[in-house]
Image (cartoon, rainbow, N blue to C red; front, side, top):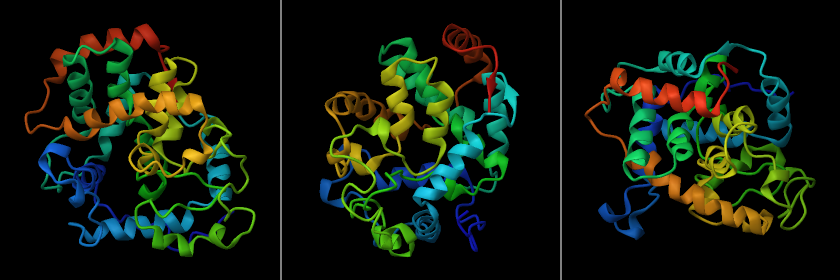
Length: 288
């Protein structure tokens, strides 16, 4: 088991703060020049650097396998989907000055933006569900093992991942099994054969893989994989099917980042529609 001497600090005050930082790092294209994207030299929050120091230090190949064994048995709790959303809402930090929206409201805003554009109902449901994996925080997981940009483990870390300098502290970067271009993988082996850094994306994908259409599953599993869907840094691991499915991941991304509005959705008005949608695709309860 990986030693986590300083793995418990909480570098981000809340998950809402994480969402706001995403907007800083991936601004709406028409509002910011291309050369101004991904300005990490002077981040608006000091907590961002600390978050990635922890994330890049401790997200090792062995750590990911350990977390897959621990959480993919789904034996922690059983709840209806709406109950899981309310469970997730206990993570909200009221001291965050930047947003009044809780996690459920963010998910509803994302889903409603997708719905307003006339996309299929499974796409709408994906918008509603996409961050549900953040319930991992409620099982005692530190934020660096729940949120953040994801990347493959078991092979060399790309310098296109945010704050790549912090990978120098990761023992895998000095392990000849893992520090080459392909590491434990084969060229164009397909992402289905690649272990990603652990977090809410993979957890939700594994929870939903028997219920949702494949494009939805790609959106859930890779929506935080910015090093590929924005930077194309890991194409050497992808097969043709991955490239086709990533068109859906890129289609989803703007709804996740840019659907926030200071006007919260009226949950009571929307709940019947989403309960019917949930019942169409998912079982009555989900195991967490």
